[in-house]
Amino acid sequence: MPGRLSTRDLIRLNTEIENFVDSDGDLTPISGKDSAIFAIHRYEGGYVCYFRYDVPPSIRQQIEALDPEEALYNHDTVKHIPYALCSKVFAGKGYYFDLVPSPDEFPDAVLHEGCYVIMADGKPVSWAWTQDRNDRAAELAVETLPEYRRRGHARQVVAASASDVVKSGRVAFFSHKIGNVPSEALARSLGVVQCATRWCIPSPKSNAPAQHPLQPSPTIRGNSTPGPRTGIVRAKPPNRMPERVVPT
View 1 (tube, rainbow, N blue to C red):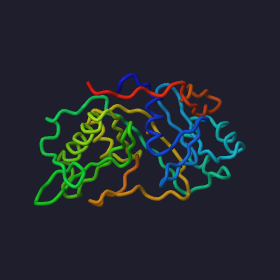
View 2 (cartoon, one colour):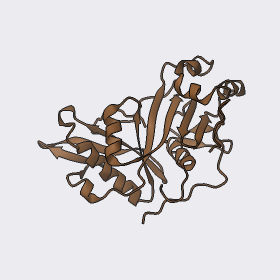
View 3 (tube, rainbow, N blue to C red):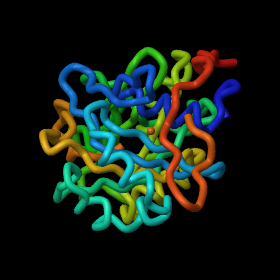
View 4 (spheres, one colour):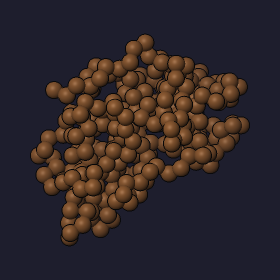
């Protein structure tokens, strides 16, 4: 695990790429972005739950009263709670790189227009970039042209991008939507460590993630004590900020 960060620290760090987490543990949108209304993360130690700052106490109580597994997997139950009404549900798995990928893992990746790419037939055919970032972490995204898939290109460009992120002292995250079999296989091939399973209801105002100039398809992307079986424990600010990761 990077430095001395716990899994809960990593979940918070991933959350802070797209949100400001205030002193009450609530989500406040970063300029140009919309925070999720509600998000729950399951990890090996329990559950972490975040609410957007303006979710009324009565709605929080209804969600917190749910069994964590019901909140995580019974999407209709939460979606039909007033204020959380939304047709969109994002469910995904989040990972982090605990080691710096070796250059031997990406011999064909080159920098092109600000991201790592594989070139073939005179054009970029696979590329990875940091979809969201701050000074402590970055979320990686990847796209490969359909006719060039299943050749190991995505693995190379993501490894190259992650190498730069980790060497800069930041944590590199990679995520995919549940059910995205190719992305799950990519995660296994990269040897990344699963951090959490994440489920959230986005803001109705949310737009698709900004696309890289090479026009990839959008991809999704990630402290509390463990939640009891009878309800969810919401996220709380840590007593200390996680230590900055320093590469060795």
